Image (cartoon, rainbow, N blue to C red; front, top):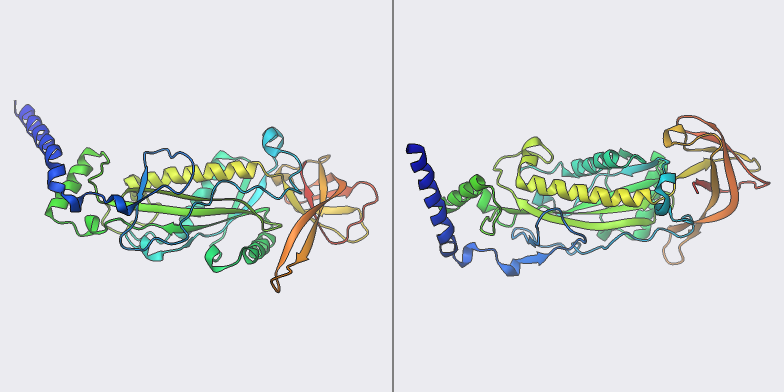
Length: 371
């Protein structure tokens, strides 16, 4: 039968190509073991990526290093283990997400993916909202300097300013470390033999070590407390996928997600979102307080939109600002428990009115922290 003959001919061609690929490929067509490095982020990926090809077109940045798991939050305002009773930790925390800067901007040129600076944090925000009901993100198009270009104290002070301006409890920043292709010519200037292999690999849709169109995706996230600027969580995520698109598509478009590279990126975003969301859920709800010296009635910058109700009780903390002993015009912020309760009396959408128990009078900057 004609159909059977065509099928048999294709199977024979495919079998022959599989047998002779190791011979045809030669040493110059195999991935070089010396140009691969192990995964730098921790945890198991939802896909089988054991190594990352180092892009030959851009040098490996020194910033690409393991940053480890979540950093322990400041001990003073974290009196109880919030993660042990998440059902009682439903107050919605406000989160500011900045744009993610690109450490190596040229690595996003292939496919015109420069909009990753805004799209990646936006996708993280959408994923957080979809899976964590206690998170309310706000995004801005401004990004912060990379960690290598600024001291941690200065970054902490910038975080405090941004959080104060946007009235948010938490701030998420990040960097796109690398998006380079291991062998750009395999996608954009392939020879006859490479075109044949690319077509064969696209047809069988099975990833293998002979496909040279590998592309790295690597980024870092940093979650900080908006009141102190202290880091709560930071981690480095990376993966790679096959990028065979030869035109400008932009990051996050339907065609981008159809590619193998896009699918690997989506899996990595989901992983990062889960990690970030778990850390945020473990933080207590904190609201800034507007008050006048000598008065026990205060205004909380949080209300019904955050889940507060009349009769709720929060703990009073004072923000103590200390000047740096080594750096001029820099300071550190710590929180001190004043052992006073705040009872919420009136609740409005974005703010609440409360009363401080006892004879405590406020002088300075204070916060209300959920138990």
